[in-house]
Length: 246
Ligand code: ADP
Ligand code: MG
Image (cartoon, rainbow, N blue to C red):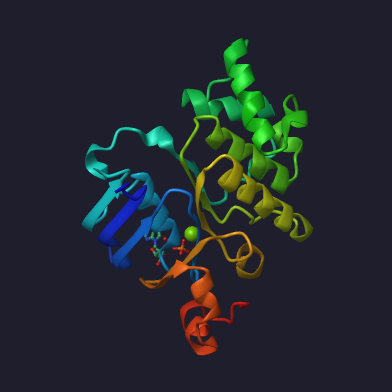
């Protein structure tokens, strides 16, 4: 049996006084496209940071690719696009290719001359998000949606098996959100990248995902999106706070 890529086992997390997560268990399997929903402050970003190993749970255990996260070494298998990473300082001088290459070298230093192999990897990552035409542009000239694609390319250049995105459509014009999710669905289906995404775009995202989880201190629901169809309106409203289209 193949181990889940992410296996969260009865995790709790407290920030000083705030109980952010309370006995959470869930699994992410290879090929899943999981949307994590939940009101502001319900612990979504905290859960992602625990998946990434950026913070350690106060209680419970997490396994990554079948290995206890305490001894998991292959961090490059898990790509991350953080919340608000698209609200880039408009004075930032970097070009698109430098930002994308930064995902590979794990350094922010600007290249005097980029090695050919690195350049080719940058092109490949930009092609995956349909942004190769922007390679020499300054990141600060791009729209919110274009910048977000660049940050995804920066995560993709390290060839992750899982991509974790925290509210990636904040800052994207409404008319471009559908195309953005189509792009994520292509990465999921064509490149077999498992997707874990926090979002409030319930209506737009439900066409693309395979699984949903709703956080409200504890997970109230984690399962196949098809299970949404059979759920009563009252139950869906209870776990999200408003109705979700069936
Ligand atoms: P969400 O992403 O669902 O909005 P978060 O995971 O950011 O929720 O936060 C969960 C709870 O933890 C909230 O009550 C928030 O105020 C609190 N919290 C988040 N980050 C910190 C922090 N660095 N220090 C103290 N409390 C925090
Ligand atoms: Mg958050």
